[in-house]
Image 1: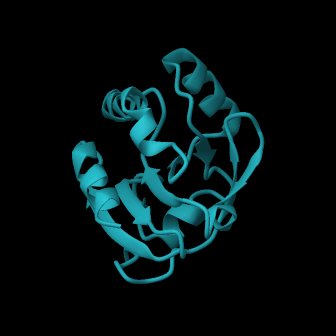
Image 2: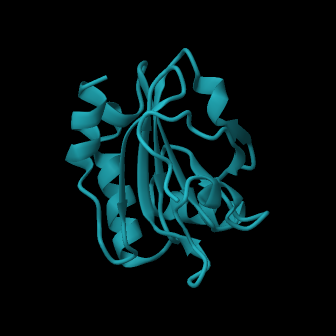
Image 3: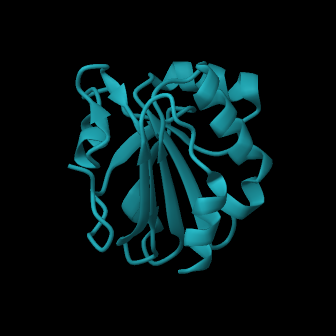
Length: 152
């Protein structure tokens, strides 16, 4: 089941594309967080979504907001992907235990072995304030993320 609005976001600690540990709770009290789950690096819809976020990065990563993109790829794969696409924000690896964080948020597709397209806007207290979950082929509208952030 997908995490519902109004519930506390499950904490997690994952490696980013540079092998550094990133913990969700480290942002508590400091920043709102947009957690963007996506299936896999180097795929058409995922690449388009993540590059679109990069183009608007000052709105998603600043003094008040942090974006964290999570996939089931390995950290080395995410490093190559971020370098190729010029992505400057954290890409987190939910590779092992495979999909543990995606499962905790209710966005892991057991049949496909990857996360579906789930986005969670988490406020500074660690509570989920907005969410959207789309199927694998369906891109999300990042303007909706911005509206949710503006409402905080």
